[in-house]
Image 1 (cartoon, one colour):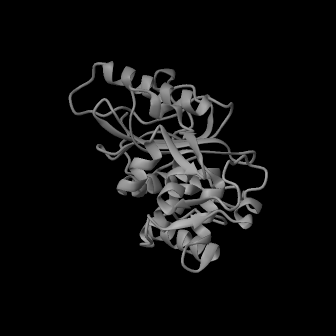
Image 2 (cartoon, rainbow, N blue to C red):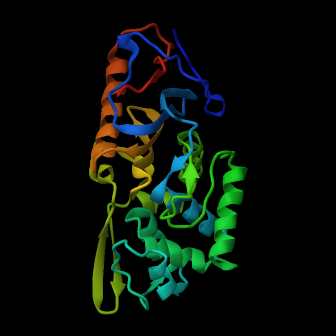
Image 3 (cartoon, rainbow, N blue to C red):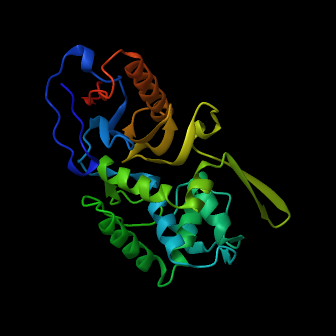
Length: 284
């Protein structure tokens, strides 16, 4: 039985399938894998269930800030309010540090810098509240019907979305050249006073030469667990992968690799030309 479903109309999966049709054993509680070229869902689990998304939020923050049209070369200062709203998370950006809007976007997307993200929203026309309102309007415009943003960093557990909605966000982010570049950069160095501070990407896959990643974002809070979203070119296929609430520090990246290995095995199985892979529910 072959199931090919468009992202806009994901149907419930069958409760039971033959063992041969089961997907890879993944450790993410909610997930979605979409083959964009074939408009087909390859793997799905809890794809329409809202859950906390942590710093995946920053993709929307960046999208709204960039669409705001403010100069990327404008210098902004980290304020005490940025530290207060990112309390409990490590940061090397002390109040008073001055960086360009471009550098703040770079650090927010690449190394998930919470103070950078909050400073971007604070300097958005109308401030943080206006930025968050714009994020929710953008979500509605993208058809993200089960998504709500409460803050621009993702530290709020009230930032909720679904794998299906986040696939739409990933595609929107992938259309922005700045987000593509900054989110996939392995590292970035900024000057703070007389110091050069080097930041690294929180996604280890961007340093793996076997992966051709178009856009990505990681996230973590206690409520959301370990999260990863990305769009990548894998063996000639444009794939969107959403992994939420993954158990274990490295399991989200291992899940992405397991998905890729499973897809390669699927492709190696002889089948009539033009028949896509069977969509299955990802196993435990």
